[in-house]
Figure (tube, helix red, strand yellow):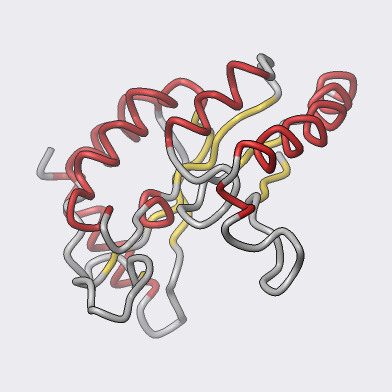
Length: 175
């Protein structure tokens, strides 16, 4: 599996507000289409990770991408914190539920991390290691169990990686 996000480098001609436009979405679909065909020919997987500030920015846009490029070789990396803009962080559970409803059977891996309460200067949720923020993992862990999904820990360092893993393991045991 090859995974990628869809956001352009800051300062390029493709920065906001173009990134969120329909034109950017259609350009992305045109560029991704031959890659998906190649993945099919090579029996490979291309996985897209939606991020709130990128072209594939919402569960709805990711679902639309999957509908326009129907293939078992196009999958999703679900990083729920990456879907949380500052406003979205106030409704994290609803956004996660929407992502699972729209993308569920196309998710191949979960990126697991936590987020802190939003500050006035934040444009998106500030991510931290699992167990260091305010994330409710119930819905994600239930989803992971249902589909037997692998998970990667993000925003960890050697000093907190074991604690993050143990935090998730303990939360999963409660389900």
